[in-house]
Length: 303
Image (cartoon, rainbow, N blue to C red; front, side):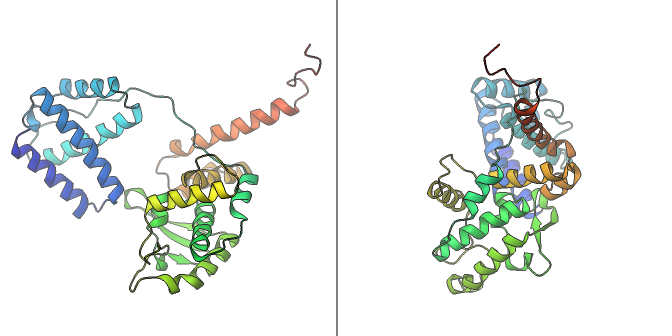
């Protein structure tokens, strides 16, 4: 693509950062998606954005699918392109959005991985030991207590936590703020963490969770520490922090049956996103049914 087209892309990235104030993770996704589209345009001989037609976008989708990208990844890429084209339309660079009605190939929806209550207790009932392990335990308790995303956890500052009222103010996707409860167990562990945090914190650091150097912990460090903790406590699967968020949602739904409350807890804009947890709940129901219903159980003699 020519220099003018690339300049418009750079302007869009600055707009996302400075005006929409998206998280670094979201900005990285936008950049990766749009850079891939630029590479496609270069290979197709498209020199500026006005030359990218509906046919061209469909060709990009087909190419991405042939290269093994999942439908979810392609849909995210199309969403990034649609946003960029809307930006260009508002600035008089395009008359229409070529990606507006293009959809990615459907892929089977994966159910979120969650832990049963016994495995969560096994994970969280360990002795923290040193101050880093005390921090790790506080992070895990809070993720499980309040169904936090990884980015929400590492973005927390001290002023976002109120242990007296048992609440946390969380900045979620789309810069939307929500208030989530903090359970008694998580509050106790957080209180213990706060009592040692000041000894290891860098001057002026506001982050609730800090690393060895006293500054805000990174998402990658949380992933590594949780994996190490899980292995230490006999959970040998590759445990991602989001498993604690999913476990919280699953256990609350199993106990209450209140899908809208779970939606609010998770910060989902659309109830349909939360409904995936009803599939998990049904799987558990089906398992119990097969084991307990007299007309569902197989005969012991195989007849």
